[in-house]
Image (cartoon, rainbow, N blue to C red; front, side, top):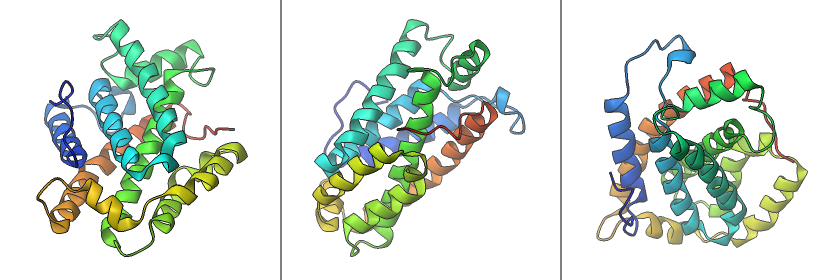
Length: 223
């Protein structure tokens, strides 16, 4: 896995595909109807979220607020995981522990971090799907549509206001598409990669959201 290596220009999507593919292959078999037995590897989850930051960087300063939030939430999870890698290797165990202690919805919990990281992945998946489905549409519209169905329902007026200001700074769709494409590859390849990524990412996120619902974390809102 490429954690120790710098991701080359435009290869974030391919790296995410690789990581999710490995994750699925190595994922322990469990009872799909019992969310308490689900295994969601913490470090691969963090790694995919880090790749999202690199994709958001390509959109530019418009996503700075979201990027900062993602990075802070990643660091929160990483610090806990590093403190006891064996105990916290499964994200579900982190959620269970904080729920049992009554801390899941308090302060800077890892449960709250996980909620917002999952929603950020929802946003990224929605944006990439729309970008390749309609590359001629204005990027402002694509970002706004993706935001409305993923993050906006959970943002308070402060977060929504910051987003509205940032939306004015997004690049055009062609520029973003070119930035996302690996060197010497075509738009058709990018489109295929995005379709592959979302086919892996969406079921992964559905599983995470099911666990968040189990622990009553799915309705959390920001200011």
